[in-house]
Length: 363
Image (cartoon, rainbow, N blue to C red):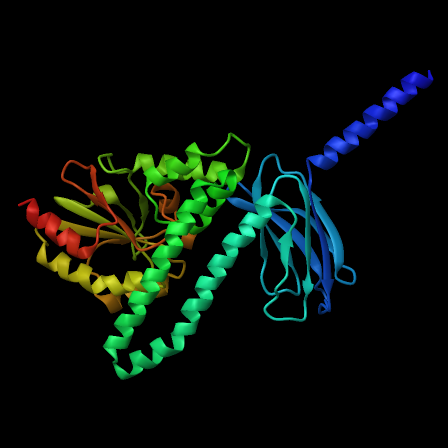
């Protein structure tokens, strides 16, 4: 009987240890954390398909508290604390992480630490932060140069920023290709414009974990394959500015440029004058249809009028929730696809000057 009790006890202990080893624990210990009334809640937010859910939460006492959750595979998450300005990016599967720091210092300098994957993420985030600080340091000089029309200084600063950004993008891609599921998360979060070949290269390096970060990247790959050059275009049905249904297939022209844009998107608005010129120049061969990632109908219509966009427009007024985002894997704008006479996609993200040459070459 004693032996049976011993075996049962040992089984229970093994089960407890097993459960503990499969969980990701976070211990919070903040100095000078004095939240306002109603603040102080610490929350772990994880992605479940397209939604974010709360995996665990606790009200901190004296800046201290413990959280844990048990993801099925390596996963990204955000630790948010009411009273701190920004959520903290995290990544892990099991193990123990700690968050410490002085909450009275702004910006908050504390960070999650304790596992290799989290430490790798921290190094990556440091490079992102350094880049933001670098560009911010040039903002004042850029603004002054712009105000006085100093094009030489503007061009010089733009060249420097673009070169720095190119280096950052190269390092980001290298990181994504060498960090398994963490690389999938980085690709989803920071590499919005990559083509399917790169996405598939990242996935080829990823083990088959049950992870939402992998699922989202696979979904992105599937969408990009579906709308790759040479594929038949996938139709979209939304509403025009008058609330009437309109689709891509309702547009008739030799070439159709589907322009994904929004009234609030600066780069989108900046290229609109060139698109207007192209539309006027090739009116007999080219039609444009805008797919707007807007939410406010009045701002959308006002932007169309202000920019003189005299081509069909559609939107479901759901912002980034626009149905086109999933269909065409749109994660940043402006983007576009060019549809040829046979209904196939002949180009993606073609620039206005390239589009001009392309149509001229087809005559």
